[in-house]
Length: 269
Image 1 (tube, rainbow, N blue to C red):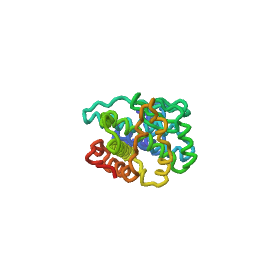
Image 2 (image 1 turned 135 degrees about the horizontal axis):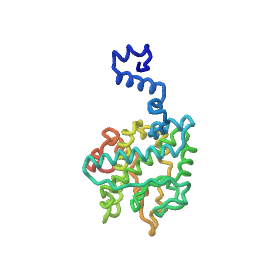
Image 3 (image 1 turned 120 degrees about the vertical axis):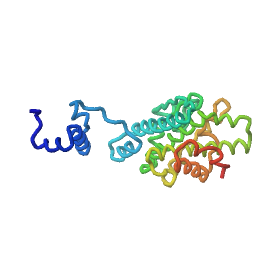
C-alpha cells in the first residue's frame, strides 16, 4: 500500500521509518554518494577543501595551488575568529589577496620577492602566486606545505596586530628592539603552530625539507627597511631556528592563543 518493497518491510518494523532512512543515508555516503542528491534529486555543490584535502588533491594532480590558499584562509581565519569570540575580544577583519606576481603586491612591497606576508596597514595577507610556484618548483615534495605554513604565519602576524603587540616596539632601539622583534616572531610561529594542529597537519617544522623551503623564501627586508616604506612583520629581526621551533611547538601542543603569551615564549634563544 505504501509502495515499500517487501524485502524492506522487516527493517521498517525493526528500526522504524526514520531508522531506515538514516541507515540509507549512511549507506549512500559510504559509497561516495551525496545523500542530498538521493533525497532531493538535486546535485549539491561540492564541499570546499580543507587544508588536508587540498594537499591530497594537489598530490594526486587533481587540485590547484589556489585550492590550498583558499583552504588555509578559511581554516586559519575561522580558527582565530572563534578563539577571539570565545575570549570576548574583538577580532578585526582580515583580507587575503592572491596576486599573480610581485608587481601587484600592496603595502609598498610591489616588486619585492617577499612572496607571502601580512600587511598591518591594510590588514591584508598577500600571496604572490608566482613566488608560490617558484617555491614548489624548488621543493616539489614539501613546497605546498611550506606555503601553508607561511600563510598560517601571516595570520599569526594578524593576531599580533589585533592584540596591538607591534605597538610594544615603539621607542625600542638597538638590541632591545631586535630582541622584542624576535620574541614577536616566535609568537607568530606559535600561532602558526596552533593553526597547524587544528588543521590536522603534522608538526611542519619537524620536517627538514619544509624548514629548508620556508627558509629559502625572501623576507622583503631590503624593500621594507627603506626610509619611505613601513616595516612589515616578515621583515623584522627573525627568531633563531631554535626559538622559532620553540614557539611553534608551544602552539602545536595546545592550540590556543594563551599558549603564545610572552611569559610562555620567554626570551630569545
